[in-house]
Length: 303
Image (cartoon, rainbow, N blue to C red; front, top):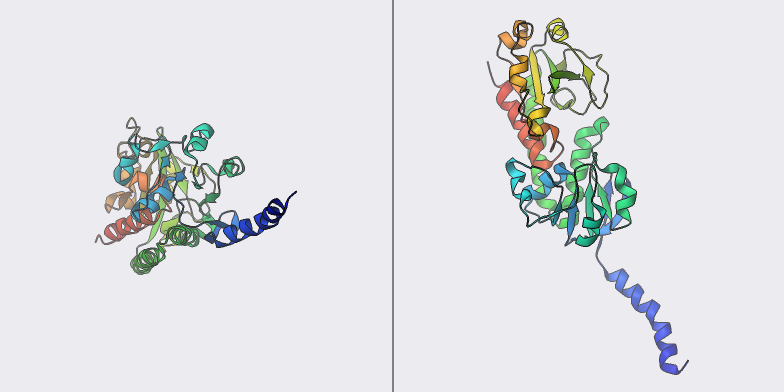
């Protein structure tokens, strides 16, 4: 080996070290722990609609999205200008690899693919934690803010969300008891404190009509007789079928029956039909969470 090659061999590790050391990195905490990520990622694949809601609210561009019939604020992502990288549950690994992202964002529906996707690019896991839902909403929003240089806007939005939550807790102090239900395929399930849809209890302070409901992923299957027996002052409804584009069994039609109509909630006009997309698909997203809180402000402001 001549002198030039010996010098090159000695300098190469040093050059690589300097290059890596000067590359910007951000230390981020997500559902997998605390790790370093590439700062200001340029090519981003997103599998989680709550994360997409936050990114879109912050005017941040993404290149890869799930192949899903999105609506509302996310409808633009149906366009062919965005690469389709799989479903909400199953990545198309070839499509992800072809996109060559420098960041992949997943959530609860795609979390099981964390390891496989990590072989392609760094994976940010924004799965919310039902045991500390608002804490994980903040964690996820702050992670996106730090990665993309949107810390100030995220902080401002979180302050507004906290203020709305405080106002809601004041409003619900004397509102009685509430029951959260989800309808799908003509069936109905109830969700209590600590569940995936328990914001009205855990965050907004409305007492649970039935505090014994187990916090399971798919809720507790209930009957119309159960709703009358529990007799809530407020009935909070999530129409899953509407969220996924199925209009065959709308929640309003299901709940318009003799038993439900005898409840305190129905007679007082206190049945709240939440935005199904916001609650079922984009819940924990920064914009979605503000919209959900605002909808409760409007509902609980009724006489």
